[in-house]
Length: 158
Image 1 (tube, one colour):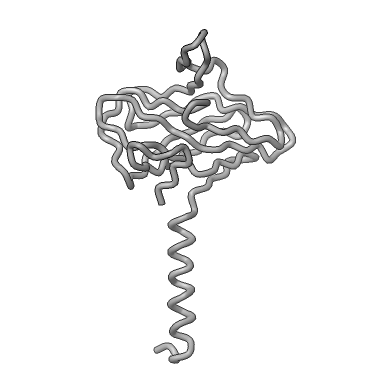
Image 2 (image 1 turned 90 degrees about the vertical axis):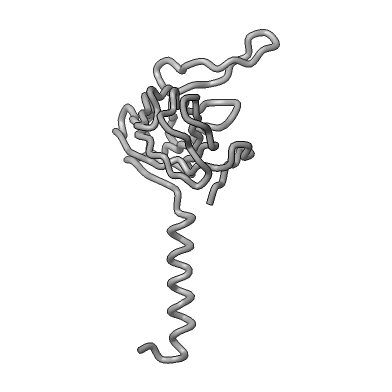
């Protein structure tokens, strides 16, 4: 049994450990750091989206070339472009370049992943696996933390 003076410290450390795990939502694949992948809740049979930050911590350019998710019929890399006075989404041909030492944001209104034809709903609190494939760093599966349907661009669903 723990000594009475050590019990509060032990409980505090357990709580800190659980909190750190709950908030740890960053990944690394080679020189690519992937920060807080997230999505908004969406019903089945429509389209969902994936957002995150990608940072190339190395000295060599890389590129996000594709993504896949079992929850979707297909997954594409998209961006928004302006055509006159109208903003439209378009698939990104050739992937997203990741220059050395730079960060690229995948966020509403910019680069993002499109999860087309959701096979099931994505509900607030879910974790949705998505595999990202980089030209140099290879592939890694991350989890999109699903926030509420109207979540602001930060999307922190912890």
